[in-house]
Image 1 (cartoon, helix red, strand yellow):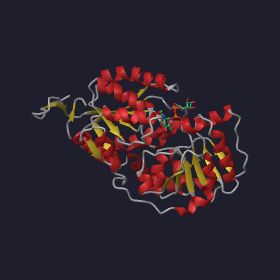
Image 2 (cartoon, helix red, strand yellow; image 1 turned 90 degrees about the vertical axis):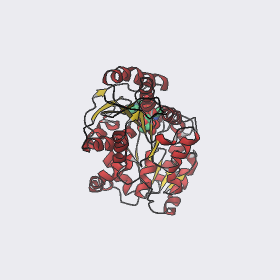
Image 3 (tube, helix red, strand yellow; image 1 turned 30 degrees about the vertical axis):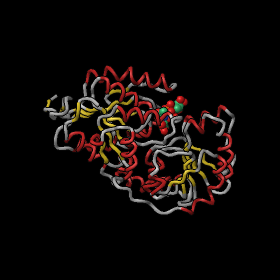
Image 4 (cartoon, protein in one colour; image 1 turned 45 degrees about the horizontal axis):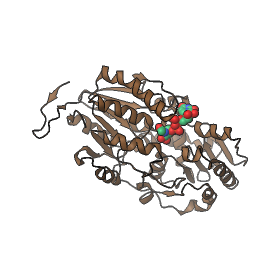
Length: 380
Ligand code: UD1
């Protein structure tokens, strides 16, 4: 590791970046990290990259398919932490990543998003004096009952480099006391993946494969604990059944939602409901691209729908992605399953797609420029 002098007013050592380590764990992480790995590999200056997969998601449909489709390659380290309660899952990531970080000593640890794997890895690295770079920093729902909100706040506080994809993210970070020079508005790496894969997505025509007519069906994803693990799930299933009687609905069901429905003996009965296994990235985006609309509680799908100009209805009372509401096609329905019944009537009410600065297919290159182009402080 080569050392360069620190600025006179900054006692922290600076180091040139030769080895970047990324951590992924859960489904939404793969799309955010894949383009950064590719951008680092394209650089003329040699940068070593190593990938850690925590194993937070482990089913083939939740993990393998994304690694393959996005050509991420085999992880260098697989932690196999699996499922568990928040404390146990977070602790397992911390315990298992620590010896790897100590042995490999990357110059920067890149963590995307807001899942338990993100905060666990960031916490261990920051205590080992390994600078953390957070992709998708500064998002806030201002709802601390969401586990992801805790993960976001903590990860941002201990990150040396904060990569943001929308203006309010910078404002949120400044409000929390993060120094402005750590914040880099680089854009949206998840949209990089969408831009890079657009040709393959278009070529798939998943709607036809599922017997659906483009523009005449709804895509649904619901998996948040606030809906799925509480008393609202039954009402959501009943309301969706009502919608599926009017317009075909395709619902690739998350394992958390599937097991909650089974536990409570809930089932769909409308013939228009196509309940299917979780889909890979390409097939899901292909279905989304030609849908009449999407109903979701996911964060990423709000952004993907905005980019594609597909009306999105979010079954939550808050969003950490307000730019999708202000500039895009997203409508917050509230955490009110009864409102699902309004959907067929709401579908026509949206403007087309919005161009959001930095959602342009080049965010990962900008991250690589910042990470490799400038030495980073050795600690936050
Ligand atoms: C996690 C993230 C969430 C993200 C979501 C995307 C946290 C706190 N939550 O939620 O932010 O939106 O991933 O999917 O990190 N399961 C399987 N197979 C798998 C993975 C999970 O069956 O490969 C089942 C298990 O029963 C598990 C449950 O899903 O207990 C929940 O998995 P977990 O990773 O804890 O949370 P998610 O709901 O997936």
